[in-house]
Image (cartoon, rainbow over all chains, first blue to last red; front, top):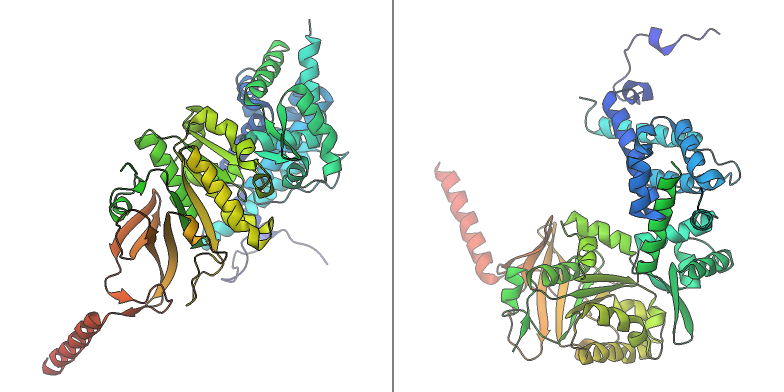
Length: 141
Length: 96
Length: 262
C-alpha cells in the first residue's frame, strides 16, 4: 500500500478531528513560549541549586541563556564549567522544566541522562498542551 | 591557577542528585526545620538515602543541626549558605 | 485596650477596631475557605501597614507553595523576609509537641524577629501526632507560650465538613481555650456557592454579630455586606427572612397583574 504524505491530501478534516501537532507547533509564538519556559527553568534551576550569584555569573559571563535553543551546546558549556557534575545541574533544570510542562520527572535512566533527549520530550509535551489549549479557545489567531 | 578549595566546594555541592535535591529543597524553603526522616520524605527518598548527604551539608556548614527534645533537626544556615554559594560563584567566574 | 488591625477594613469594623493585643484567635473553616489567605493577609498587612513583624508556621503546605500563592495576591513574602519583617517556618507538628518544643523550635526566630503576630497553620495537624485527649493540652501549652512572649496568635483549624447542617468548630473542645473565634463557611443560596464569615466569640470586646459575605479577590479577602436577606446560614439550610419573602410574593403578584392588564 502506498503512503501519501499528509501535505498532499486535501484539508477537508471533519469538524471534531484532533488538530495535527504540525498545525500549531511551528508557530513562532509557540516556539517562543517554549524557549522562554526553558530559559526560566535554566535560571530557576541554577538559582535554586547554586544561588543567585552563580546564576548571575552563568548568565552574564557565560551567556547560557542564549543557548536555550541549542541543548548540545548548553551541555558542552556546562560540562566545561562543572565537569562531570554538570549532569547533576542539568537534571535539576529538566525537573524545573517538566514541572512547568506538567510532566512527572522519573529517573528511568540514571546513568544515561541526556539533556537533549529530555528537552525534546518536554518540547513535544509543551506543544501538545498548547495545541489543546488553542483548540479549547477556538483555534490559533 | 585553579583554587583547589573553591573547586572542591563546587564538586561537593554537585556530588550527587540527592544532595542537589536537598539543596533545592532548602533554598526553595529556607524556613524548613525538620528531622532527617521528615526531610527525606519531602524529597521522596528514604532516610538511609539522604543521611550521608545531610551530614556532608552539615560538615560544609550549609545546614545547622540542633535538638528539639530527643529529635535531631536540621535547618539552613542562611549566612553560611550565602557565603559558600558566593565563593562558588567567584570560582566559576575565575575559570572563564 | 490596644488592638491589632487586620487591615481588611470591613473586617476591622466587625471587630470594632481589630483583635485585642495578645489574644489567641482561632480561624475555623473547611478546606478552600480562605483561612490561609486571611492569615497571610493579616501578617502581610501587619508587617507593611502597621509595623508589626510576623511569623507564619506551616506544617502541611510547603513554603514555596505559600510564596507562590502569596505572590498571586501581590504579596512579596521573600522581600519581607529579607527586610526582617516576616519569616516562614515549615516543620513537622511532632516537633512542636515535644517538651519545650515551642521554645526550641520558635525561640530563635522570635528572638531574631521580635514578632507581634504569629500564625499556626494548622493546629488540626496536631491530631495526627498526639492522642485526641492530649490535643487540648498541647494547644494550651502553645497558646500560653506565645502569650508569655507577647505574641498575638492566629490558629487555623480545618473543619472536615464543607457544607451541611452540622458545624462543629472544633471536635476536641478547643473553643474555650482561645479568646476569639472566626468562622468561615460556604453556603448554598439559590443554587450558587457563596461564602459567609462570622465572629462567633470575642472575649473582652463587643463585635459585629452579623454574618457577612466575603470574597477571595485577586488582592486578598474582601468582606462585604451582611446576609440580611437570609437566615439559617450556619445551620446549612438558608432561607429568606419572612419580610423578604413577603416582598417577593408582593412583587410576583404585582408583575402578574401588570402582564394581565398589558
